[in-house]
Amino acid sequence: MNEGYIAVLDKISSISPTPGGGAVAALVLGHSYSLVSMVSQLTLKSDKWIKGHKISKNLKNISEKGILHSIDLANNDCIAFDNVMNSYRLPKNNEEEISIRKEKIIEASLEATTAPYDIAEKSLDLLLLLPDFAKYANKNALTDLASASQLAESAAYIASLNVKINTPNLSKEDSRKYNIKIKNILKESKSLNENIQEICSSRIGW
Image (cartoon, rainbow, N blue to C red; front, side, top):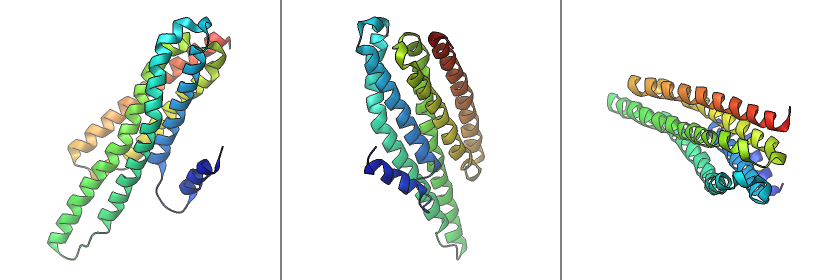
């Protein structure tokens, strides 16, 4: 651990609303990618786990890109939330200003919905790849893979909270659409994580 990591935690713990839950969800996803990358490399290190080499190479590549993308996702969420706050600060002294302000709030809220939704979607994308990996990954690193799976589901759940808090400010059509989509992501993420945990536990002998 280093000062850079502490600086991030200090920024999250500050009185500033950003980075908040959405950004943290992205960082949690980044940790999941990091663990998957580690398990991939540990699997590739030995021919004992040769059956897992192909998927390990793919996941190593995906995770390396995912780690960097998770930072972008965190920054996007911060920007989106700041835009929502700025839209609420717009003047409302006459009908025209009120109308403009309302439109800006809806626009910013849609951005603040899609930003965490993207995080949840990426979390699900990662989880979809892990059941097969769990079957062939280095057995000595399965607790790390199980941890990565749990983190990915947690990232999806945390992101979902930030999706749902913004949908009331959207159009009825968009609100309904994102609430349904995020519900489906949560359901699938939970099911996948449970499956991955079972595979890991079975291989370990728990």
